[in-house]
Image (cartoon, rainbow, N blue to C red):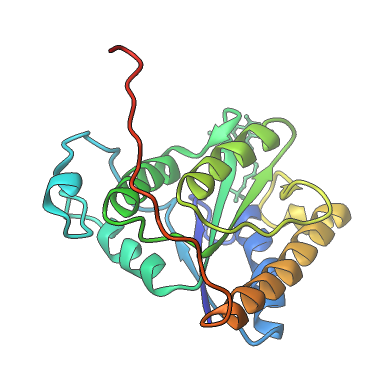
Length: 211
Ligand SMILES: Cc1cc2nc3c(=O)[nH]c(=O)nc-3n(C[C@H](O)[C@H](O)[C@H](O)COP(=O)(O)O)c2cc1C
């Protein structure tokens, strides 16, 4: 099994990376392969609401000059996905948000590509805004009918300078437990395949609340 983890920080080995690495180490110990992809230092523009992905049904974003389409396929191939972001102004960092809006619009409107994969959010913050950012990352996971592991607290680690988060002992424990629980949940999902029938996908009801 494989997990792909996205690092929304512009810092290569900043606090988000370290948090993802703690989770990844636990997954590796459970013999689950991991790959950490850095999103936050790339040039990724936001969704232009062209709806070409809905029309074309080709699992692709129409903006083709950046790695978003490659990362969509990485998510499709993976059994588990981790969305990691530093807190920027009490929210997901801008480049990561641009990636998530585009990638999850494509996956959702091309047959719910991530349905029943295991997914978790991870957040790094200096002081305030950890929970709103955690909730924002959860929105993508929940919308996609994914399955979510938890820890013994919300998945937020504290630190300012790159690497400082490793001194947040509670945060380190939260990430370690998340990694263990994610590995366990992935194995449960895997062992249920062919034995426990997954619910059939329902056609989406779409209401606009105007008429
Ligand atoms: C543009 C910007 C905005 C930030 N906004 C916040 C904030 O709202 N609250 C906070 O506590 N820290 C904020 N920070 C600090 C980072 O969240 C913190 O340093 C985090 O550990 C960075 O993670 P990284 O090393 O993975 O980039 C901000 C940092 C930057 C660069």
